[in-house]
Amino acid sequence: MTARNAEIAEAFNRLAELLEIEGANPFRVRAYRNAARTVAELPRSVADMLAAGEDLTALPGIGDDLAAKIREIVNSGHLSLLDEEQRKLPKSLVELSALPGMGPKRIKLVHDQLGVGSLAQLRRAVDSGKLAGLPGFGPKSVEKLGEALRQHVAGPRRIKLVDAADAGEALAAYLRQDRSIGRVEIAGSYRRRKDTIGDLDILATSPEGGKVVQRFVAYPEIAKVVSKGTTRSTVILRSGIQVDLRVVEEASYGAALHYFTGSKPHNIAIRERGVAHGLKINEYGVFKGERRIAGRTEAEVYRAVGLPYIEPELREGRGEIEAAETKRLPHLVALADIRGDLHAHTNASDGRNTIAEMAKAAKAKGYAYLAISDHSQHTTIAHGLNPRRLSRQLAEIDRLNDEIEGIRILKSAEVDILGDGQLDLPDAILDRLDFVVCAVHSQFGLAPAKQTERIIRAMDNRHFGILAHPTGRLINERPGYGIDLERIIRAAKERGCFLEINAQPERLDLDDVQGRLAKDIGVKLAISSDAHSTAQLDFLRYGVDQARRAWLAPEDVLNTRPWDELRKLLMRR
DNA sequence: GCCGTTTTCGGCCCGACTGTTTTCAGTCG
Image (tube, rainbow, N blue to C red; front, side):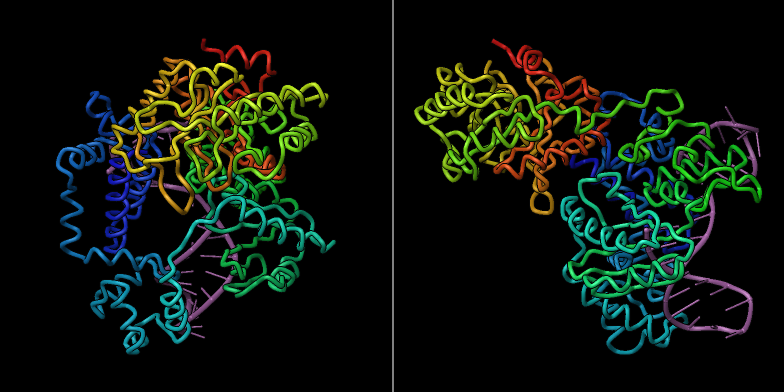
């Protein structure tokens, strides 16, 4: 996604928010939200598409009107309708929708009745007791809102998938200890393996929902029970993670799992499809009139609307339903397809383990090869290797390859791309490696055009093999350095270079949308753990997750191949 | 505002929980 796209999506989302507060047609509001999502997830810049004379109405959810509005933003930097709305209602009003319990109706009410137009003003209305006089705001509502305002200061953060896994699997295990509970599955964006999740959604089956809810709210790690009924409950864990539980009967398991896995756009599309088939789909099943005709498994639900099973990672409303209709769903890469790891560190640079320990751990995972790719000299903070030290490491790898059976240790290095696009190690030593991983570790602030040039210039070096963590983003910490990723991918294609999906949980770089862009352009990707210890080799799984979300099949991934085949792909000299 | 396996007009997914209500609106997922 480019900055321009983000700006357009932001404008549409703001507009949707304001229109909703005004009580506009909810479907019109939805149209703006859908369009915002479409634009935000587009890997290409809509400005470029316009410049190339492409028809934006070909994009899903973009019609003549919204295409014209995009054009207006691109050309003028403004959206007149948004400006107009913001004259009617204060800009800061949309901040209120971040508070739980504050929907459009209540926002409009506090604005019209009390003149509240911002979080600060709402806080004053709560503190002064004015809010309590409003219809619909009883003592509990006011108290909850006060609490929400106090907590809001910290701001909501998305939870990294790896952290969600720790919290969610422990809670699921706790529920599974109760033998009266049938199945326990973590659904939601966790099951879709999104790089970050907003909250955890847990589905359980039981004929007695109330009992499951009782056990759920008794979980020791709970800080606060937000709601609890006989079929659902919401709690906040001590870690701050919100968990929603939903209980259904076994016969509804598939329908409920489908519903609770989402995504929302995917579910809406499937339900609309159901309506077209004369069916009603909800979390209890697929119904023809009063009769349930499907719902025990997810496959049944899809079959009922004439579709093959769609993997959770694809359920983002990004064309998966159309692909399923035309039998063009990809056969997704799986962890079991991975034959080796192409990016790992040792204690020679900033890793924890020796080459031998790393190799044995990789062998234990069933890998056929493991590349040792320690940092190069420029990354002093990670104790990067100079030619002399790397040369010694290569000799040791030769020795270990003779000694350790059943795995091949590949000679590599994570070589810095210097500010001018030169590689940080001389050709003489790079010649002796099996392949070279290249990465940017400095000067993140270069202007996008320069940063892009820098990387492409590095690719001109015949030793350049795989671009590691291509955008440099760190989840929740920093955005990527500004680059024109599409240009870089095209440059890689021309030169026979590759890009990486870095599986470190705080990186996941390339992400799903970017990975799909690479696939569409025709550049294969490495899925690499970038492990800094033997335990971190397991991170590769998170890379596979993102690859699946990027629609990648085994043939799109470098390290699904045996080394003999891979070697030919990586060879450029 | 979008869009077409009933369609170029008239639809647009569906249900649970809470709080403040005397039967339901608002919010959320």
